[in-house]
Image (cartoon, rainbow, N blue to C red; front, side):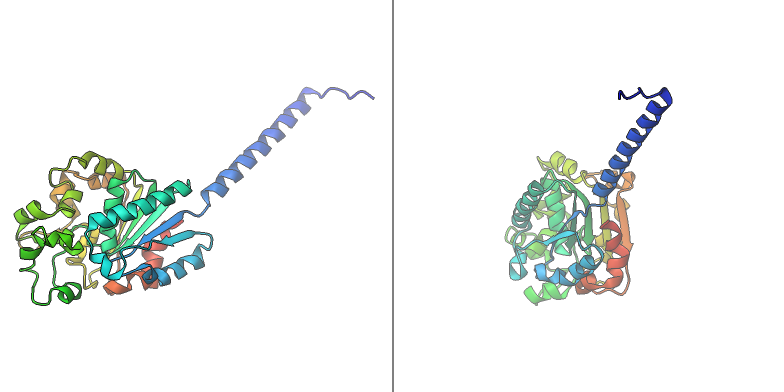
Length: 302
């Protein structure tokens, strides 16, 4: 028996059902893609290695069991005092390899000195890092007597260290690369071959590339606190630093911010900067403290 042709109303209903089904499929596909776990990459701090992230990784696995998290292995413990440009080159290649293996957006979480390494990686590499979480990092430099420095230089105090760090030999030590003595700024500018270059404070033929790459970030999360005990001043974790009288000036008062030398001002205007301050946390506890994780890290892993 020959099938009767559909009436116009039936044709309209059929079209609506088909389009509705297609829209439902597309929405579900997009939602599934949106909820897909991102790739998390972690870089350790000075005199540390990947295993120092074990507590943090346990926290993350409980909340994000499908997240692919990798703590990069390299320049561990004593080797972490090697020059930072060497470390940047090494970790850039590791991150580039990860990027080539996945189309997923990447979250980069870096601790302490690792934050400065990550700043370097994000400046030299055309990356797809979506979020950079800087966990208690001396992002604007370091100037203070700490146990780390006393271990290596027991006879020197902070006001003497410029005599060594602001030499060619002193710049072969990682912490010499970000030593920022506010009383000897001219020598810092002449000898700093990492932090001053990274900030585009000195003549740098790649300054345009550095800034363009850094601005690929969608979010920059800055975590620190007044009881850290190592990052000096602690506000360096929020890009603040001393003036020549050792009064702390916040990020917006720094010359490289006002000049937007490496893109930080632009990120701030975009609303891409997020600050998190937690009191009562010592430096070695940031990556194992549940409050820090819940308040400052977890919200940015979704």
